[in-house]
Length: 172
Image (cartoon, rainbow, N blue to C red; front, side):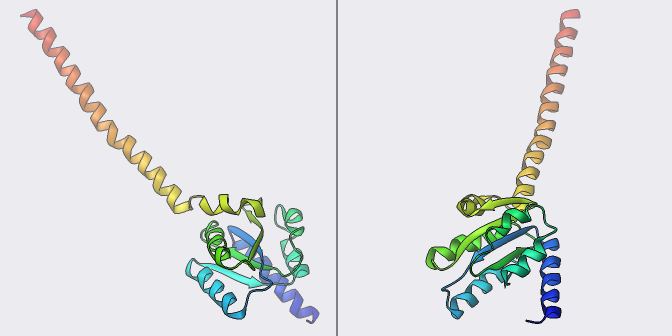
C-alpha cells in the first residue's frame, strides 16, 4: 500500500473514531468470507460499521483518543474495528451473540467515552442498558414522581379541609 493510501486510511479511521461513541477491536482470523459477510450484516442492522484495518494504521488513527495506549496492546494478529456511532453498547451485543456460534470471532478490547474495557468484560458490556433505555427509565421515574405529586397534594388538601372542618365544628 502506498504512503498516500495509508494516510487516507488513517484519516478515515481517525474520523470514524471521533464520531464513534464506542470502538471495539476484534480478531476474526478463521472466519469464512460468508461468516464475515453475515457478521457485517448483523452490525449494519444496528447502525455499526465494521472494518478491517492494519494494526499500524489503527495505532496512528487512535493516537488522539484517550486510552489509546491501552488499546494499542490489543493490536496484534488480525484486527477489525467496530464503530458504534449511535449506541456504544450495540457492538458488544452483536459480538457476544455472533461469537457464541463462531469461535473464530474474538473480542479484544473496547473504548467507550475514553474508558477502556478488557476482553473479559464483554458480558458486562453487552448487558448494559442503551442510552435510549436509560432515558426511558429516567423519564419513568420522573413521571412517577410527578404523577405522585397531585396525589400527595390531594391528600394534603383533603387533610387541611378536614382540619378546618373540625375546627369549625368545635367553635359551633
